[in-house]
Amino acid sequence: MTALSLILVLLAAVAHASWNLLLKRSADPEIFAWCLLVSATVLLAPLGITLLWFNPVGLPGLWFVLATVGLHVFYFSLLSRGYARGDLSLVYPVARGMGPMLVPALAVIFLDETIKPLAITGIAAIIGGIYTISWWGNFHQVLRRPLLFLRSAGMIYAVLTGLTIAAYSIIDKEGVGHIQPILYMYFLSLGTAVMLAQYILVRKGFASVREEWHSNAGPITVAGLLTFTAYGLVLTAFSLSQVSYVAPAREVGIVIGVLMGVYLLKEPFGGGRLLGSSFIVGGLVLIAFSP
Image (cartoon, rainbow, N blue to C red; front, side, top):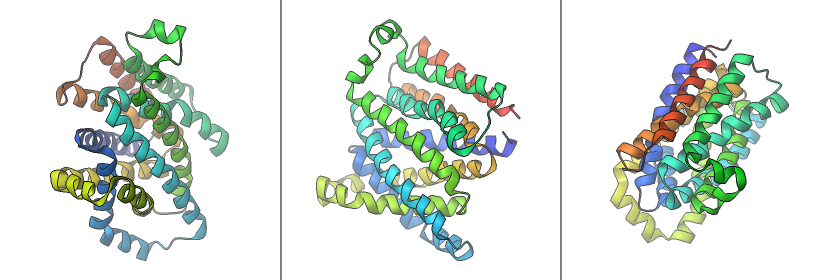
């Protein structure tokens, strides 16, 4: 993994955990998620138009945009519902943790990538850290009844979110080969905002949207810019390194998310979350030094 890719991934992790914190704090996470997409799309329209002017887009790239927009509609809906029903420090690690477990295998199968032994060890450490954070104190129950943790609605949505992340990571790795990464991110934000508009305005109502905006206009705007920045950096890293390395490495943001949940939202913290965070950081180091 290149040094530049690692720097981009670390910056993206901080931005990603930060906007997830703002989403968790919102009154209605689904409305907040849609508003942040609309905010980013409007504020960054000049950037999107400029990039499109200098980087014309062909048909193959547009197919990838349509695919990722569809997946991101599910992503934002599932993630928002997960936060409405569970702690940031539990939903965030599980949602983010499915990717490192699935993306490397999918990348080998569909993208013909190869993974070095040192990176395999790092990926395994990250996965182990994620599930240590999520299941600490319940290992015996999980071993006896593996689906027990799915009784929690928040955890169900977290797992479904993680599956969606794995799918769009593979799509986006190919997509940025056809479209400039930041322009790709702009199309993603625009398309997802448009696709979610009918659901939000009809299901939630314009009055609820207006109330959420009046209550959280500042956080929504900041979260929109952070969302765009976070995944824009990841897409750029995709264009520079293997997705099987980038996807697990970006999960260092889980450590940041757990710490934010503990110190800012006063969620419970114990040895399991500390140990799991150490595994994640150690795994990131191994991936960083893998050729």
